[in-house]
Length: 115
Length: 114
Image (cartoon, rainbow over all chains, first blue to last red; front, side, top):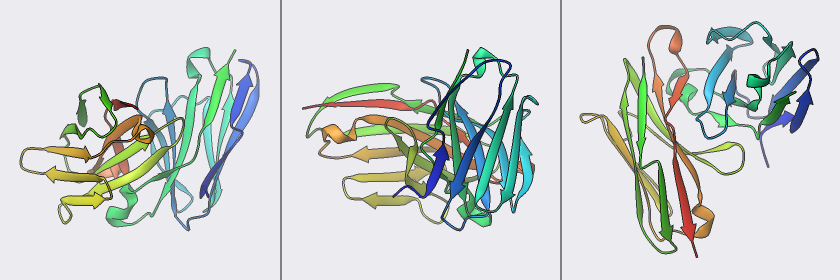
């Protein structure tokens, strides 16, 4: 069973659309992450939430807006994206304390295509 | 800026071979080094190595961390076609606001032929 789930699996959107990616974790973790992964590249960190508060924003453009409604849910709101934003968006979760914060577990990702 | 470099970038072997994947790093405040296996989508956690745990083993996979020379290796013995994947190395940095932040290497693409 996948303990970090993401919906939708695939998303195609136009540059004027507004959409949201959703992530849910069932691991009791208090830290959640959004990563972006382009083809043949490693994941790149976008945002980190710890105890439902944004703790890291890696200078991500404002057309990406994260939201953490509670400790098990993480959303990424998308608006006015560009074609170069097409990528696999991965959600991850971890314990929020000490060395365990680095042991991150990933969801299956949402494959986003911006047309 | 943290830097993680993996080698080789790609590797083709036959079933039963043993492979060694390399990861070298430069980070300001090292806390951990992790190995992930990525097939079609989500990276799957394999190992985390830290100052207090520099060797890990699980079945045919094993990994060591050399904190002095700043590198790690991942060994896979008796490879199987199911081992075909991208293997990602990531390093955790503890400095300032980078708590919980992982920096990934570019990955090694492993292909195992029957």
